[in-house]
Length: 392
Image (cartoon, rainbow, N blue to C red; front, side, top):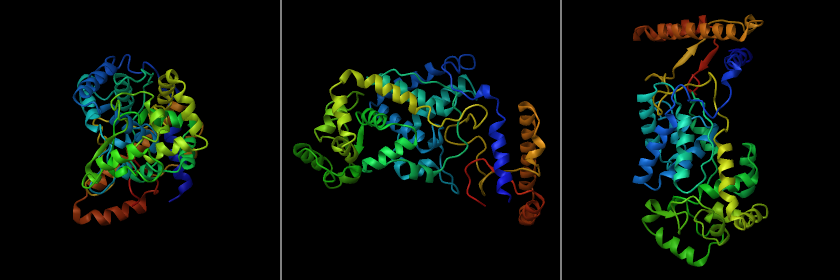
């Protein structure tokens, strides 16, 4: 396969989308689904009343989705028998809140079919949960599209662990466009609420206040090591507030990374400074949450609007990845065309590829292998993997 020509064709698919679709906006659903945010907020409020841990779950779900490969709802995809997904990544095994996003999506599909993306539901729903839990009512722009890829390896590689060294953690955040101070703000907000599994707690990894150490050790003793939970904040575990700074500095945080941040030469002074400015935290946390929700988003005509958040609109077939073949085309043939004509030409190419794929799948089983070989010989070999599929 000519890799250079493949890159050109793939790049063209992204480049020909009109620029008018390329930005998020505050009123994206004003005409297409004016009640979208109200519907989402109603679902969140109902779930939060039933389970105060909803906010912590959604905050973690949002962060894990955005930090793996952008805020694109790729974390929501269920794995298939022959294809893994982000949901199976180690850091995501204990992520919760999926059913809340599914519930909101079902309500939206009944009101405005094929309009509101799952990625927007995650961002809007998390904002509502934070607000209802005492946190800031920060702005969330909309217009995200859902991904066509869900990659377990990217999640495993990109999501930081609970005991990652501080310099490495800072470097990971900087790579994603966040300063060290913004990193501290995100962790402070996210770790001021909810619970952590005992299995992630290492009391002896770094200094812990003796009384707190004894309490944690008792809570996570014996069989509770695998099944028990500990509140992130012992005083107000269901409120988004600035308690993180006092707890971390006092060595009363269950996760190793939070205690490390308090004693690190770079981040330690940041925690002390924020502790002394209690009224500054919530507005600052809101600003960095706004930034997080725009991380590597998909907009315009890229991606898709999923009908169901847990699966792609064109899921993989039971016997392997769903792949569209592109019949022979030279990218140079598209030079000089307007953006609209390029889009039309590319759509025609993809349509032809779809027909070829469908024709191939219609071949009887006893002839399928031979037909596939003949097709590969005839086709140019250029193809688009729509679902982050494994190489053939």
